Length: 440
Image (cartoon, rainbow, N blue to C red; front, side, top):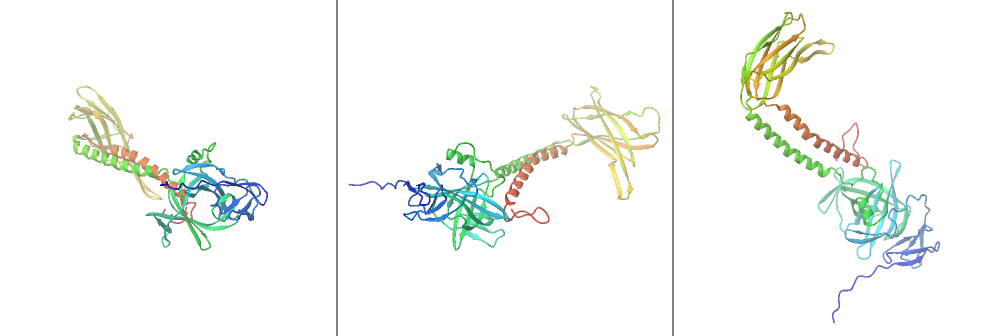
């Protein structure tokens, strides 16, 4: 008679008593745990010893180390149900300041152990590597390669264990230290832990607290992340790439549009005249020019004024008047040019020429009415007036270019600032002044 496959063993949960204080202990990974920590008297017990030999006692200096995810909580990670069975607080010191994070031990009887880490609201899903990465120690900063992905060295420090609770698949001790080295390629981080000659590699992937709270069905809200974490993915990374792609496409369209309008524009000189204005004369100085024909579709008219001004100004009140309809386009232009020398050398202000474009002028027969004004007693100012039809206006394209460029630059600046904040916490912090920034 044939039989089916042997089902996997059920999770063994066993109740024991602490030999130190007699408190009840619940062993959730019985047969897999190496050490168990009593929550009542904080004794670290040898789980492999039938009598639960006490390996260490430690004092709790603060209640801040209590786990945010209580032991015994269950949740599904990557399609597998895990139970939180252990918790520890670890601390490094940088420039004399302590920085602590929390680690959670998760267990599934068929998949084994998995880990969660939390630092100031930033979470990582961590698993032990089954193959060793390739270390490129001669690069600056050093890198490691794993499964075709390159990770940059972020930080190396001595981490000490300051609090433990629950079950662990290794012989945990309060006060034990290990050299921890992190290499990052957001949203992942590769970490090595060296204790003596033994090195363990793990991979962490950034997770949001909101997702974990949903996974473990925890009440309330997770703590808000503080600052930028080492492998926290930049929220602008994809947006920066997309915005520059859109910018490139729109810039190409803008260039094609500019070339098209430039080629199709008449850019034709319609009228020119030479005049003079004597500010000493009395009476009416205004006059009208000869008439001229504006042909083609409704488009702009450019009026250029060129003078012989020298440390002087002139104001010209123009009116472009349709001879048939009487429609007038009024505009005034002040032209001034001053120059000289002072203690700083030569200087100049203004210019003797001026150009203005009158938009959307219909075809027809027109003339200019000109009313000049100037400094009384200055004398004679000679000037030329030139009228052109349908002249390409490149300032519009400049404004359009800036409008397209602004969001791309802003988003890129925000992305650079994000990375600056990330690497400011590393062993390769950018130099704020007096030196070059890190390559990252």
